[in-house]
Amino acid sequence: MDALSAVVAEPGAVPVRVIWSDQTPPENYAGGRWGVAEPAADGYVIREVIYQQTATAAVGKGARVPVPHRTADGRVEVAALWPLVWHPKGEPFWRWAHNGWSVERPGDYPEGFDPVCPSPELPYEVRVYDVPDGIVGEDHSGGSPSWWTTAWCTSLDSARELADALVAHRLGEPRRPAGGDCGLLRAEVWEHLTHDLASMPSRVHQVDAAPDRPVVPRLPFDTWPPGRPESAPPTREPVWYPKEQHPPHYELKVWSAHAGWKSLAWFTGGRTPVSVTATLLRIGTGGPYAFAET
Image (cartoon, rainbow, N blue to C red; front, side, top):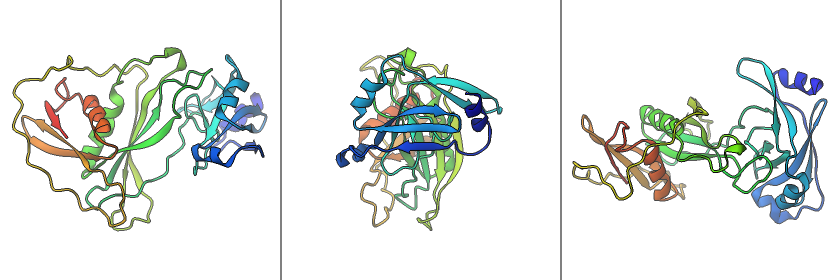
């Protein structure tokens, strides 16, 4: 453990050696590949398992792997994580199933792949890292931690406001508090160059959730705050790039007494992500906007 901690203390990636299984069915690759990690003096050894369920049974409840990780101030601490790791399809990083840390860079989340900007009018992408409830350290009954593009914005101010709101509160208390923190743990804003879609975007804002963040306030069910203004007129859709197959058709409009209605962001995936975002923005429950509509 001293040798592995010394490796982690140095800048750069921690070496990872993978022992691939020749029995893994090709159809398993669609959801990524799974393995069990073991610490070594110079890094980690990952042994691939045929099925995620096989790994869950093989690891056993209560099993832990020591994972040295470097803190923000440069110290090396050791976490005890469940040994199951996974390799998402098409991505270069192995991740701990417990909390989504990169095996190569323990203590931090691996970067997600950059989506293609859908419109020259929406250059700012709001991206979140989600650790689903259900990863409890000795069982894996939930989804895998991963990055999601939540919305696209016309302005940096709107994107920053959205990112900050997404990690300021929880949607609810974790059902399995022994499993560690979960939910939206990091939000980022990425600026895309709309005149050169082949270029890499740049990260212009990042914010992490506080472990003690409160649960977002909610109005009682079927309760509507009084004084709702007339709806805003329909917004002209942004001009989508010709090859965009899944444009973010769902727009979130917000209203405040000093500014009236304004368009905040555009979403894919239907109304649910818009509703979740409106809840975390505290629409009508003490946030900057009293009303919203989609």
